[in-house]
Length: 632
Image (cartoon, rainbow, N blue to C red; front, side, top):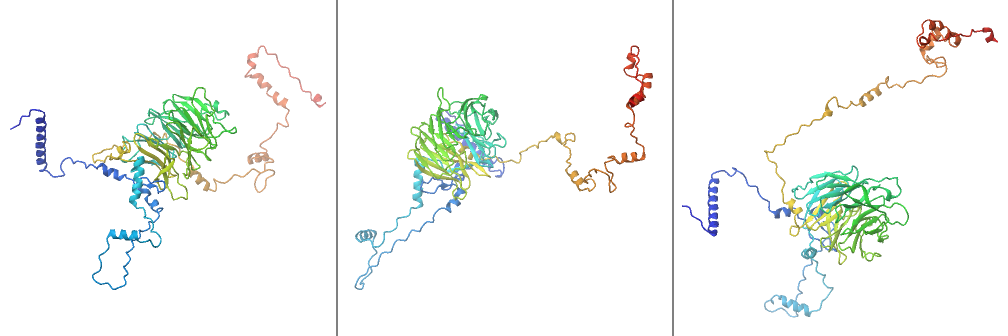
């Protein structure tokens, strides 16, 4: 008998009952079949287990006085650096009671804790004071938690985007946080998409902008629909979001002395950035000693040429460049160690508004403005990071030393709230320290934390994405390169969390992949290249007759059975002359008589011009030879 449902509550109750009945029927029918029958449900891996697989060992950051926290791959080389812990001495035994008489009766009860404290307070301390208590690991963890809680640095988990065969020197994450670009010294640019990437972390496209030129910088447009690629060549390239080439800027004439008269850069580029607000403007710097502003809609000409101020005339390379947060200022790091800043205003030129001479002792690798435009950070090959107040540039606010740098693309980045700024360090040849990511407090201007990224590879580029709340750091050496992504599942969003939880598709036995037929027209005999003559030449060289060098002709009379060249260069001519078959009579014959002997034949049978003038041509009269006159 079916129950009739009326009302909203009764309808939901009836629906639940119906689902229960259907479930009971399904279970009853399913029990009649073996467990291997039918569609098997896929086991779902919980997110907690997935994130535990990417968790960094000892992931919380340490303070400036402690060792840096490292990933699981870095555990061995840091354990070797950790000093051995001294064991805690056992508490001293209470001194025995020394009384004068023999002990009578049962022994006294053991003293309580309160009695011991009273005795310790009353008695005088004899001997040196006890050593201070050693900080336990729980106290260290509490200090680390305090640092992580105060600044909320996402460091608990880590993934690595691999694929490059050399150090990754360029990094760009679009503003939405969905696509990542990485460029390397292996001349390749790899494109990663978090939304379409699974746990294998493979790139969906790779490009080679210029053959044989290192990738030095990558920059997204403000709308994230295009990106700029700067390589070691003199021409920057523009690509769309999918990696298709939109154009490349023109190259200048290297034979023109004045750089303002050239149409483009004449030497390799060093850096380039897209305007933070305007999607048609980009900035590039080059080894030719100039900065140029371009319009992406016109690849044939630049908008502005900036020549830095130099102490003496010449060409000093511009090693790096940067826009400020609003795109109203341009900063350039010059090869002579100076930092020059230009304010973009009507009628501005190459004369810098701010000129910091000898800011660093070596080339500058990175510049970064704060969002309020008051602070400028500079990174250099001299192993230092300097903080500058643009209102007072005579002396830096703070200089952080002992930050080794061996790459011209090492940069600086701010945290999303700009309370911290971070930079990477390079691995030195004889040092036991690996590549680190160093965090500094902007307010107190002190080192907050060091994070070990790789025990053998240097950290070059770094970035802290504001929307994802994830930290990107590029590493590498001469044989490998990768992009490390640090995140925390509790505070980070999307990005690495999306692709790590997406398991790769498993191949099925029903998958079929047709093998393509390759048609190669050059394999036909008509288009085939000619066979190599190398083996044939080697065979000929081994033959003593064919490889015999011909003898030079002899000069003078012949000897040893050979005929000389004095009376004829050929043997045939020599024999004919000696046999009398060749007679040279032209030296003994009169040329006039030799011509006139053909006069009768020419008069009787003219062939060429004579028949046309036969009627009008006068009869030639030749002078008779007078031998007597000739003799006289």
